[in-house]
Image (cartoon, chains in turn blue, orange):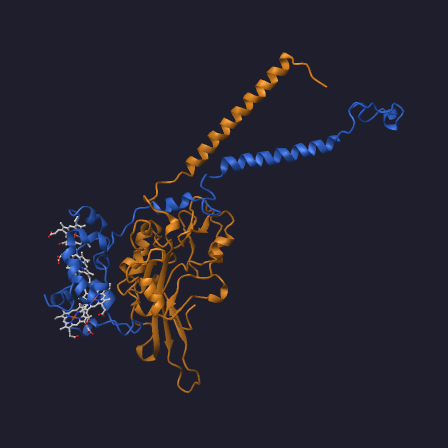
Length: 169
Length: 269
């Protein structure tokens, strides 16, 4: 800065270039740098504004999505929900052949009823037995199947207690 | 070289500082607005994804093909009713007897899954022609290196720390790459929301201590579900792996499926 350029230098003689300031970036380079800085800054600003806080909490995704997906209300109540009021039915079933069958496999979605017993669960007609027990060559051999037309009768619950199927009501 | 401190100089400095603060406030406001759009509902209390590792296993020999799981999944997850959309489904494999005189050990293999296997009819092939037949329930294979989350361009599908592969419906752009990437055909584009959908292992149920809907209604214990990090007494998952000879679907693809099948056969893919 302090040392004055030689007035006899070719640059000074030509009347161009920095007369007193020494080296200076060419204007087009300055513009390029400014443009780059501008793009980077606006990218960072957009990223700051648009990226959800929870992004990256567990990985390259929105961590809050887990909570959102988990927030939905279940539809099926689950066997444990029936235990509160029908524990005697659960005990009966646990002793019989239907021990692996859940309440809602036969009774259908019963959450509304489990929350408010005044809402009656769907009345079962008996056709649901056939869905599982009708003979089918694809069914495994361990599973007891019947040919409904050749079986003793159409109304299953006349001869089988649904909760203890090998007992006669 | 020093510039004199003029009033003009002070005013411009002050002005630009003010503008800076204001634009920062504006950015904060914009961010808050964006966050509001992506706001989340409260998760079930006390659930920490790092403390669980969920897993489902399939015992093919226990499946009686009642289709209750298919129906329950549709009901539980509000899956569109058309018979082209399933998060879980059941396939029926029928291996026919070899034709008399042919030197093959087994005949043609017929596979079907009418309406996802919700109600199988009993007669597809006459009983006399069947050599062997069985049902295979299918669902998301919970891959260790899931191709679906690798191809997602926006980070909308991912493997959670608790071992589930989920789709973020607010981030999904519905490009369908993941649908094509899944070698097990477990995904579809929801025709109403136009976002990808798949089995979530009933994430809204398991985080509340309930079992997935398909496991809940399965009468034969063909679907075995559990938490590897919190084994219970006589844990079904541990018992399954200890007592059965298990296999994964398409292991040669390197996707590392975590869902293991017992009683699989050569024809099953």
